[in-house]
Image (tube, rainbow, N blue to C red; front, top):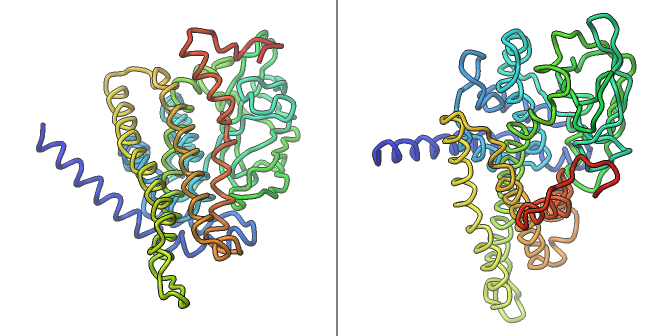
Length: 399
């Protein structure tokens, strides 16, 4: 057992080094331009695809690498170090693709997963303006036309909107009775009836998470996922836990990048009046130490949680059993990341405040707090679970 563990650790180390090479050579050098111009990081994503990282946990029979959740968490972290926009797109893409791995028919897997190895990008499309962050509650509804469905609707935030090759999109279907009666459709991103609105945001400016409009988009029944009224079950037992692990891991990477930059800056910046570097000031060392301690404490949780995912899958247990712990991890990781980057901004003073990497990361990292489920809402759900109260997610007129 010990030798297997050591072998696995060595494999993960090699994986991290390989992904880091792609990040260093392609992703990080593009990050400033992506932010400045607000462009979708196509070159970054293709570089990931060229090495197989975008199909990391897709099984080998669908041209994926067939790796595990630990590999996914480490990959998301490394990509987060290079470009938070790219890491968010990556996490959403892996989640969408894995939804098809878990629940897609053989035909769906063949048609939608195999192109991923060449660079096809997937994403989820869930939220609607009328219900905000309550992504489990949609008011839109598909229409039936023979065996097909017609989608006339608008989603409020869709990562990779207008750029994804396929969307795993949720909406109601005719006859739906309860808010939980939501269905997943696989929607071809090249359909001419799809249009994406602008994404003008404080940070993660490359992920194109603006509104997505579908105008008379026909979806064949062959691209209904599992069956009608199954989306909530699918999300809870597979999609959400994976997404939460990925976002938390990516934001560990964002924080690690900021800390690395600021430590080098502190060591090299010398005040000539007293001939002392910033590293000579105790108050600065204390801030850096607090940031490092908080960040270091997250790593064991990240790896332990990913290992739980691996064990649950091997045992055939639903990942939904880990939903609350995954939510706690997302909350804590994104909040620690914000604390670390805030400290980096504070320590670097005017240098950090002007346009540049620290300023960009300070804007980017804020996104983690509001990514669904937003931390305020997520904390309320965890608290209700803790005291034995029902979440009341699906009660119209409730919280």
